[in-house]
Length: 309
Figure 1 (tube, rainbow, N blue to C red):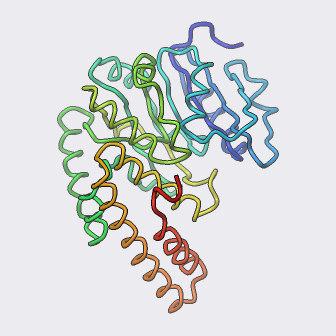
Figure 2: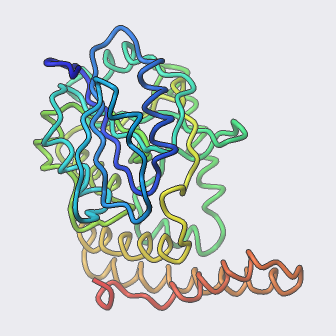
Figure 3: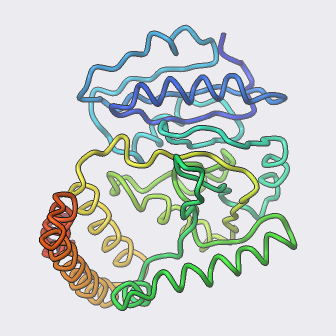
């Protein structure tokens, strides 16, 4: 049966991911101890037949079905309306728990200065993947254009490692939306996620507003989930388009029109260059995957925020 007074509400947005969803629900049920919790599953109008027969039998699960695909941010906003916990954990269905000490994380998040808490992600080979990022802007676009972003990521990782050795966590710009721990009052104070974003960048927008409100966004690498990225989104062009458009909207919203125009031009040039490079490698190696990536980057390169809003 559902807990009347859960401490934590796990929020899962499902879209064509029932196999992964069933797995992560089982993981939460078997691996989360010493804290009362509920699991709120928001079924986001999947286009494929979904099997919820297993999770519907689990007492801690609350299944909410939408008759329209609201995207990630709006889906989360709707899901929390049904959540009873004092803390929200937004977690992707395509994840597995590797190491998750919720007692420790709750001790950290009770600090009133902290807005959102994220943890380390690994891939299917247990290799660490990028779990935190800087806010996008003209400077970051230039780093990417001149292939310096990997160097910047390396310097950021060293800064994070130094902070973690001293405090166990690091303050960052924003954490990956695949796992976010947020206090309920803070989420309500921020009015949730901006509904403009259908998918991608909504966690960066949320984190920016948190920082401007005086909160800190922290990353705790000792806690780990495995993330099988992109299992809900199988269209590479759709992914690139949404990322590109939403980043431009983010820059326009927080940094102004001039920055948005510069950012758009730099990013479009960057996408065009990457598209040409992928196409050349695809032609030289006869790689269908590289050719598809090349055409996808070239298609996205022409998109401007005002034409696709």
